[in-house]
Length: 407
View (tube, rainbow, N blue to C red):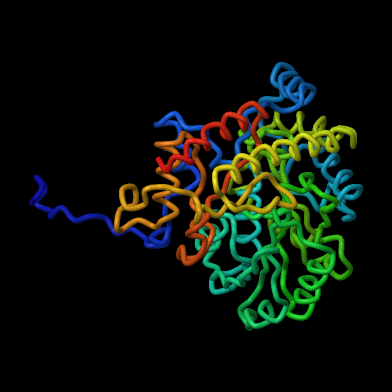
């Protein structure tokens, strides 16, 4: 159809970089939960607030005028707190002036590091399963992911397979510990193997440690960047969201040697300018909480973990206790349900079961295949989040009892 100017109506040319993207399955299941009144165990969102002193610090910051931009890469006070915590807890020496970039959450820290330190055509090794933002971030940066499997039941990996995944284009390896979605906490031996690979192949390690304070049963978190030889080739990423129940504040950080940080800061500056200033002020208080805070937090999460595990097992799920983080990957193969009635021919079984569980049982979780490339694996599993109050999780267990009738 012509226009008044005589020009034909032609659709604009649109780039295809985002063609492989699909909507976040986690956020989609959160909306499903809201639409049907299900308890949302899909997205990693606590149903309780940050510690009172941290909340008060945020309120005080808002009232005392810290409502404008901070320095792009973070306020001096918050960077100092991050550096002190990183040196003490993570065993990584850290200069707040040259080694710390405060970001809008872990997600922004990751994409800033990829854009700053890589080039289109580079490759990155990702251990599978993986958190869903990793691959889209790589695509945005023009970096090709190469997947190396973690082997059940312990989610171990083989160093030989990591080596086989490397080639002349490999620039990065991406590590997440404690791990989402499996709850795996990498051992010193496993991290040493990764460190050896990085030095052999001249790789940069990007390490997502957002669950660094959440581990159980005698496991301990070890930072890859603290191992010998990794000082100049590791980007260690964390944030306030998980350890302090402040996921909506969107405050994270990237710690790396000065030559890496200088480049990360350039990207961050133009990507988001700065993280929210008043929440950085609250972050100073959070990072100075005593060790007893983390000990109590882990004890409380261990109780929540057990409530969920007991409820899942009583309903017929097979699941092992996660070593860290706050997720359970549960196999529903033995759970009675009317698959023929609830699963459309074009649907993956785990997606159909997740929708059935949300709509008919009132509990929302994430289909397991969304953590694997192409959904090739994980179709008999769902991921459940136990960052909820004991009362909420007991109600989840009560609702799961409905499955005993086959629904």
